[in-house]
Each structure stands twice: as structure tokens, then as C-alpha cells.
Image (tube, rainbow over all chains, first blue to last red; front, side):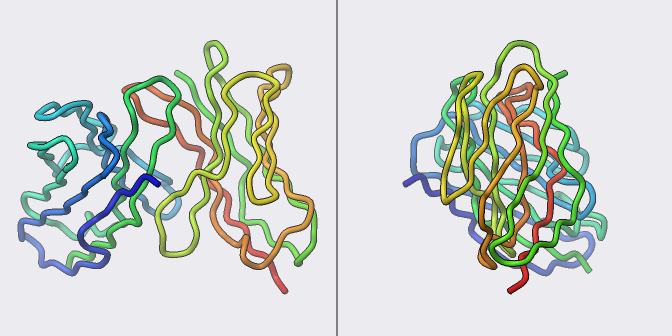
Length: 113
Length: 111
């Protein structure tokens, strides 16, 4: 089975802190994604990566950056956390082929106080 | 661009009731279609998919048929259980290798 593992399920951070959310997948997938999920807004794509060291902005990249130094690992970085970044963050991965299934991690609940 | 429109929720049913959650799509061609489920406090899981028109996807008693005539992919289950309480998302491939998701439908099944 594909496994996408997010390092932290629950985090509480202070405004202005730098926050790292880590994600690892074990199926040699080319594509990796970071989504944000908020009530009433559904899932919104923050960034995605289709190869090592490659990244593309999604729908809401402002206030975030990403890093993909190894194929299996995709990190989301909040350079200076703000309260409006309190949310559930979902990492996902897929093979790079049209119509392929995207596999999700269990999510990271981030609260910024 | 390609998009999905999903039935507004929330939906509340009694155990053993019949479930339908509507999903219609707008797309160029005939893309794969997906239903994902999100149980409380968890990430999304693939529930079922259909890769071409007239295909039926099925899993865990859920079914959805890819109907190109009506551009629909409605999710159905003949007899829901309390354990089916979750949020259900319809999706299709979007730009940039990702999936475009519907807004999600919250299902609550009462004993």
C-alpha cells in the first residue's frame, strides 16, 4: 500500500515563528502536493512538485514556500506564521501519469496563536 | 477549465437508508473521475474511480457510474451504516497534474 506520512499531526506555533511541515512518501512517486483545507473553502492547492528540486505554485502560495531535495520528501515552510494560516494541511503524492490516483497523508492540524 | 459541481450538504440519513450524492462535471474529453472520502480527523482516501465513459467504479458497497450523456458521476449506496459518516469529495484531473475537487458533502448516518 502507498503510504504518505506527515511528521506532525498537531502543532501549535506562535505568530512570527518559522514552521516546517514534513511529508514523506514510500512509493517513488514523481508528484507531490501540499493542500490546505478549511471549512467552507474545500481543498486548495498551495504548491506542488513534479521532480526533485522542481516546484510550481498552486492557487494560494502566498506566505508559503516548499523544498524538495529528495524524491520521497516534500516540505512546506511557513516563513513567518500568521493566525490566518491556522488550518489543516494535507500532503499528497501521485505517479506522473494523466488521471492517476492521488494519495493523501493523514493531515497536520496547525494552530497559530 | 475542467470542474466538478457537487451536491450541497450536509446530508443526514438513518442507518440502512439509500444514499445518493450528486456530482456533475465539465471537461474537455473524457477524463478519469474519482470519489474520495474523508473520515473525521483524517486525510482523504480514494473510495472509487472510473477511467472512461460508461465505467462503473465500486468499493465498500458504494458505486458510481461515469455517464457522459449527463456528464455525471453520482455516488450511491443501497444501505448506509453509521461508519459511513464522513465527507465525500468528487474529483477529476485538473491542470498541473493535480485533481480538482468538489466542495465536499458531509454525510451523517444516525443509528
